[in-house]
Length: 288
Ligand SMILES: [Zn+2]
Image (cartoon, rainbow, N blue to C red; front, side):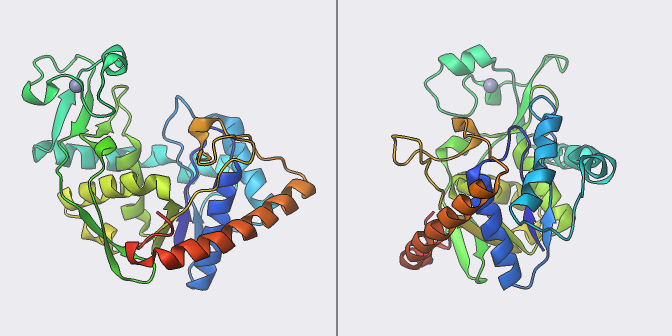
């Protein structure tokens, strides 16, 4: 099985659809079923209309999944990440017991005024939290080791540590498990054969491989990974501006002309992507 894992903190955009089409093609090519997993853990950002849009837009654009929720109600009842909260917390506790985590009390204001692009801005790592009631995030004491994984062709590849992933958060200050741990635990739970994601998620793959290795969950590194190149926004002046939610990408229109334009654009993107992947095959990722 290969999974699609949209996060409903905004409407799906072109970049998502390109990734999903590629995922569907690759799953058919490798004789794998397609699974829909909705990453709905972040209750502060997830909105019901975004979730509903996933169930409307995917079939409209020809994405058919064999495993996973069929509707918002089905998601809520059987598939939501909320049902796996215990598993996420169990992994966080294991990491904590083995001394891999530290409590970070840095405020948002401190983070904003710091020069550091990531990680804890104070000396939280050196201090033992005296008052457990004090609001704090839990961060991983990240190492500097490269992490190994398998490509879609089953070859080995490695990723260097990414500066932006230094001491990344595994439990947020609001108490919710962070994306990296939830995504890893879900992949261990459902056991996909492959993961197809954009190259903007290479740092996340490194972070999740590190978590898996600390948790001695070797199965994760045996999953077949593809990191594909991203599309650029047609309406952006910056040619390399990545299309992602953080850049407030426009939502998809569910019209037949939008569908054919998108499909055309996808085929064009794929032609370029294939050429780039050929030149860059040794890196185990598609134009990563
Ligand atoms: Zn801190």
